[in-house]
Each structure stands twice: as C-alpha cells, then as structure tokens.
Length: 221
Ligand code: 0O2
Image (cartoon, rainbow, N blue to C red; front, side, top):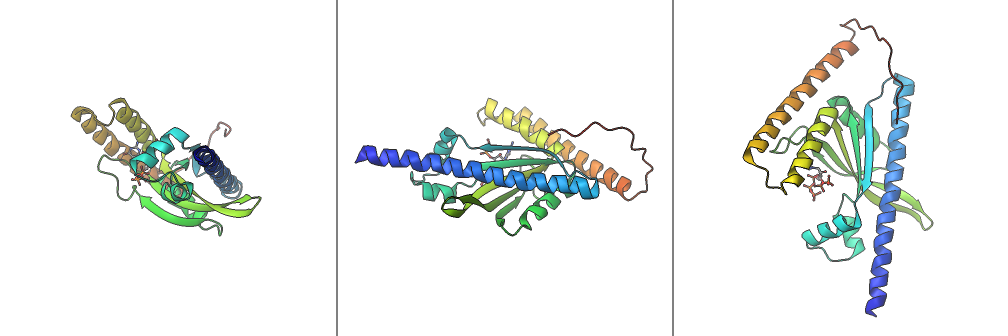
C-alpha cells in the first residue's frame, strides 16, 4: 500500500515537472514569435536575451517543505508559481512593459499576478517586472492550464541581480554590511544607467539626433 502511494507520488511529480517543461516551450514560442515579428515589421528588437529553467526536483521539494505544504501535486501546482521560469532581458525599461503587454494580450494567456519591482524596487535595490501567467499546454487529454513565472528586466537590472544572487548565496544570506552598502550603490548606478539609456534612445528615435547607423553584427540566438 505504502509502496504503491510512493510510486504514484513519483509519477505525479514527474508529470508535474513535464507539464512545466511544456509550458516553457509554449511561452518561449510566443516570445520568439513576438520578437521576430517586431524585427520584421518595425526593424526593432525589444528583446536582448531569453533564458528559462524548470525548478530542479530538489529545490522544488525544499520550497514545498519551507512553505509547509503537503506532498500533493495539485496543491503544489497551485501554490508554487515559479516551477517554470522564463527570464527576458530587454534593452530599455519601456520594452519590458511592452513585451508583457503583448504577451498578456494573447487570448490564451491569463495574467494571474504582476509584481512591478521596477516601479517599486525591493529594499535591497532589486528591480524587475514579474508576471505569473497561466497558459494552456495541449495534452492528449486536452488543453491543461499550467503556471509560468516570467521575469522581465533590462540589461543593467539583470547584471545587478545576477551578482547580488551570487553574493547572497556565497554568504548564505548573511551578506556583510559593507557589501550590502556597495550593492545598494550599484543598484542606484544601474537605475541611473537605465534612465540615461532610455532618454538617449528616445532622443534618437524621435529623430532629434543624427545617427549614422554604421555596420552591425548579425543577431544570434
Ligand atoms: P531563483 O534561484 O532565481 O529561482 P517566492 O517566489 O515565494 O520565493 P516571492 O516574494 O513570492 O518569493 O517572489 P518574488 O518576489 O516574485 O521573487 C522570486 C524570484 O525573483 C526569486 O526566485 C529571484 O529569481 C527573483 N528575486 C526576487 N528578489 C530578488 C533579489 O533581491 N535578488 C535577486 N538576485 N533576485 C531576486 P528565487 O527562487 O529566490 O531564486
């Protein structure tokens, strides 16, 4: 009896992970279509980089334990919203909001929640636009809604967040005050860079600055 329920749990877990891999594929396809279409029709690429990951079973189980949830995949599916994660890096702040608007305008995408850490950065300086989306994956049994977390940020926001993440893990969360202070300064500098780049970009776009387009590298990935 107990062996049978363990076997069932393993099966449910691998199915849960598989469904989240599928939702990543669905959302990645949507994003690359939006990106290619924008390049084609506006000669403008709002997206610099896209990465994705499915939470490892180990870190998923740790989170389930931390949150005091039962080992029930239906509950985990509902409560843990970052099993499937996609990160989109844009050049400019305006692009982050625009990409999200385009995604949620699609009628099979349901916006569950938005956390706008660009408008309201976390106290440590973390900035990013987070959206929890629910998107159907087309299984043999029919369309099944699956949740996916999309983080959209600019290059400076991403640069800052990856370093902060490394430092956080290196010190196991107990980051020395001096480094915390320096990270806050770096967050301010990243924010200032974003503002400056946005301003320059809109000046160029509005045509008040003469630009010689010159040669460009071919786009990869
Ligand atoms: P990883 O390794 O990137 O997956 P929760 O999702 O329940 O843990 P919350 O507050 O509901 O927490 O979610 P929130 O605020 O939307 O943030 C979740 C994710 O955003 C984190 O996932 C990070 O990826 C990123 N994030 C949030 N705050 C920070 C921050 O201060 N610094 C950095 N570098 N990233 C941050 P994980 O699971 O913590 O990490």
